[in-house]
Length: 405
Image (cartoon, rainbow, N blue to C red):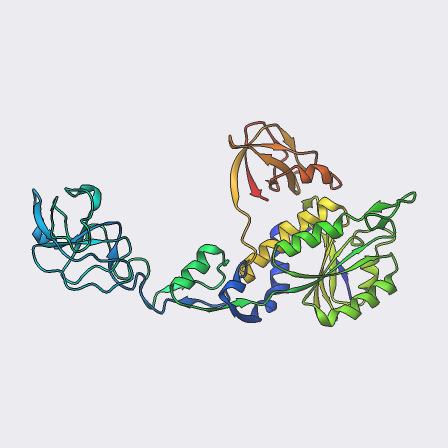
């Protein structure tokens, strides 16, 4: 049965509860083709099956030489057969220099490359022509990419939990891998509630508002890589909501609701989840104080507040960072330090999350006030400004942490 917390929990404590609730979902693993892994989280350490590069190669266009043949002061060498990329060259004879292309294999016997710009003449001779070239001194290893200088066979290429972006997938392709183990995509049921809420496009009757939360959270969840099922708006009938949840629960890994979690007289989510293992209580955070967490028929449930900014801040403060930690996806929000363009006030006993715009000069301008209904201000923002517990006033120019959106 649901319980009501008596004292507000800290942001960190509530996030820990979300982490514990969702941790079992991280055990589900899919093996997918490399191209299908973009934006997913790596589910296991991947070890390099080979060296990168797999052979010593040239860092640039130039001449492959024996360093002993070009001592201080340089030397004039006979031009050997050219080494194109992708070919296995013949051994380099003493006293010769082989034209070599960027990425081409270093011939056996050679241990350095002289860039073409340093050669006299500074161009390659025609193929098959008999020619000499004067080259400056070249120490051993100059402009040579050695075997395994990027990564050695047997080393960890990527650690479990890594977010797989283009760079990571490029590395796996370079290692010859075609499949990758990733965390299974969590399936989320998203339910918005409220008799006063209607779908966009329907004429508004008195006392009605359009549903922003459905689009707001659906977009956030899908952007975070989750598979979302939406049921439309659930009216304030606890029985109907309970039946809706029971119908969809076997098909999903997580239920997210918005609205109906406060202490009002018609809190439909609290009523529908009566008799289930769900806690409803306050977190010392503004906006987003009222929160619900627990399980419904064994399925994890997160109950977010009904005001649009509150529900998105709840997602960003609790669900998104836990998903990044447990599943490697989405990538964490970058946290940077910025200076306030104006003063602000905050409830000293709460962690306040303000919306703002970070400029190129490193200052952050607040967008709107602390109100949880200011959707326009949210839409203008590119950061969340973090004002920790214990802070009542900050002056213009004071430093704060901001999370990039």
